[in-house]
Image (cartoon, rainbow, N blue to C red; front, side, top):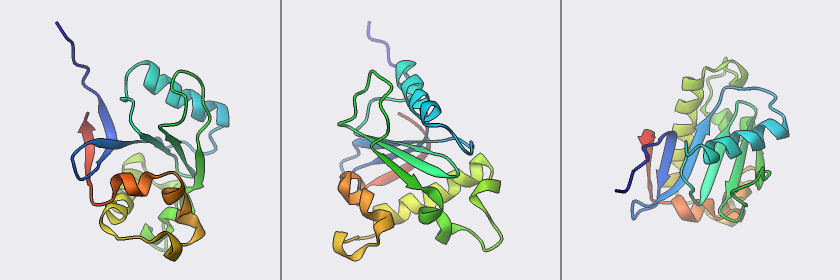
Length: 155
């Protein structure tokens, strides 16, 4: 008898064929060490809280950490990309808001808005700024463009 593990993730992003491409976990922790970041991913995978997917994004108020399918799964692998959160999410904040003062839910709402824009917008590598180059370099943009997003998803 096969058992099916039910996993709840903060945000799941699918390609147009409804194949899960990206799992996003959001933690409201500022100033996380590199060791904490790698251990967090390792623990989520080791205890089957998240499935193995082509892309995993850990979102913190100060940085995003992206692992790609090429990253080893069964060790404390460092992320393939470390991205400054403010450079990505600043346009989604009200002038009086700061990422450092958002609740976890507020950060989730911002991430969802940003991901919706990324999935729906026809970006061109040569027309984007340096803050979004990682989307193309990692292959993530191609994997999720024209896809869909599920919040608090069961995967």
